[in-house]
Amino acid sequence: MRLQTAPGLPRLTRPGPQIAWFLTPTVSLADQQFDAIRAQTPGVQSKLITGSDNVQAWSTKPGVWDAVLLNTRIVVSTYQILFDAVTHALVPLSALSLIVIDEGTCL
Image 1 (spheres, one colour):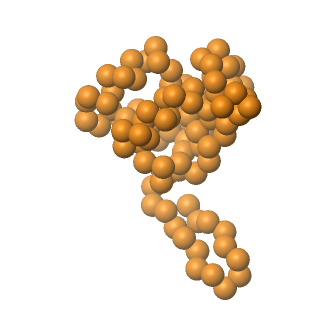
Image 2: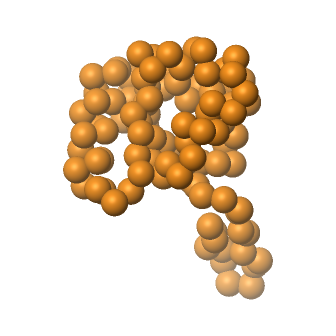
Image 3: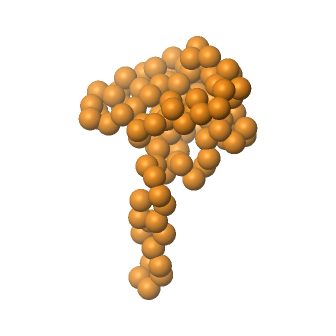
């Protein structure tokens, strides 16, 4: 991915695919957002990740997060899912190109 910079400054290139991560305060809102995103971007690999996916167990098994996110360009989850994944170094922030916070006033 190339990041646009001001004229005369070098461009930064990050290797590997970048992920757009949509965050919501509730699972029901995550479901709604995921359905809307999937309908509008049918050719893009997207995933809905919630606590019912047994995410807590993923941190004890090496490579699970990598496998789940392989070829995924858009993820929708609650705030806590991404917070835990980043806090435990399971998802590096450098893998994210965009974070969208829905209902940010709830934070």
